[in-house]
Image (cartoon, rainbow, N blue to C red; front, top):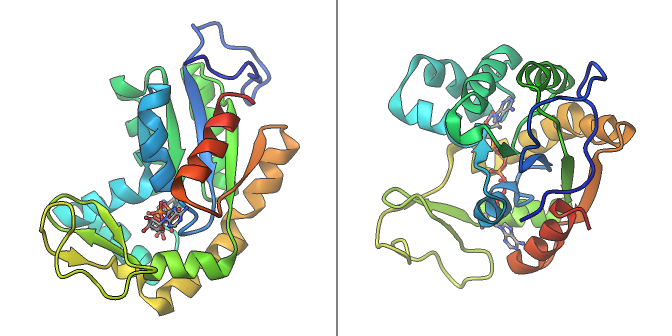
Length: 236
Ligand code: AP5
């Protein structure tokens, strides 16, 4: 699929001389907006990997790595993991071969410091940021989606019980055990929303100022949102 026409110079104002990438995009949005759900649906279509800092951190926590041990206390409280840990993690991930032609970032950047460091990383790699998508959803829906989210310990898929009469006993996809994310508990969700408003939402104006921001209505069905997102990513 063709990438959007629009490309802008990287932070230092230079235009990279390397071949054009397929797509370098950021998905912004509050917890529960549907960033992960949508990124998983469109990554194959655009031929770039979906990179979720939340997923990478949860994998480190599950494997009890040094990074996982450092990140866990922040994640469980719904707070942001320190910038430098995240910047190192992203530098490593976008340096891997499958990310050479672009990537779809979900959950990064989340602070101004992360955004500025990311521009430096892109500049070093001679890559351009094409678009920043902000998925917009009302708080009431965010809370409903997050409180209804259950994950499977076997296949990792998400089953959302919002609108169901009762919680299925096992994963409808594979029969595995269902569980809730530690940070999806009601008291932590409110903190995550506040952290988003205070530390991440300012990035909307930051990228608007750079002419890169596209807002997408994240309400309605998953399929409806995908349709709007694809249009934006295609430069429509
Ligand atoms: P992260 O995993 O990034 O969590 P988040 O941003 O809070 O995002 P969520 O995964 O809750 O939501 P989502 O927008 O992906 O929605 P989803 O598609 O799952 O981060 C977790 C933690 O890690 C952070 O709190 C922080 O501690 C740390 N961290 C991560 N990145 C960091 C960074 N850069 N810097 C510092 N710390 C960082 O959808 C939610 C539910 O809704 C699902 O069940 C889904 O099925 C359902 N759903 C989706 N779309 C629809 C729809 N249209 N209609 C109905 N249901 C829907």
